Length: 171
Image 1 (cartoon, rainbow, N blue to C red):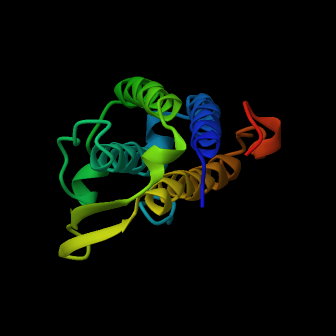
Image 2: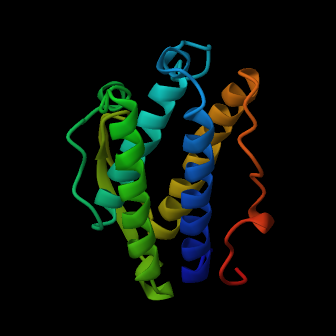
């Protein structure tokens, strides 16, 4: 389904896009970043908190990170209150994702991952390769919401197309 090269490429894309989003959001006031704009998690700040929290949850399920302190989706939306702290935590975790991705080989993507899903209220299991693909798809999905919000504020978040990013290998 996916390869180590895919994981490494998507980790680089993720870090590149997060830098773009955070640089663009830096141009807003804190009140603008926290304003409920009617998206799934309400605000830019909450959505970016959710993205970081979800990345931490998934990497912990893959055995590559400690689980975040926030244990639920609602708690993940408010996990980091300060903008500078959130931006710093994002950068550090993107570095961690990249180190994990750089250590992946195709064999590491085999097998299943099992976890307790608070959303489903039960133990789940799925292909590790599928869940790794989900990690990156989830990031892109919610970052797209943030990009739309930034555009609504008159801020251009920059190019988002994968072929124009830091692709390192053909996937």
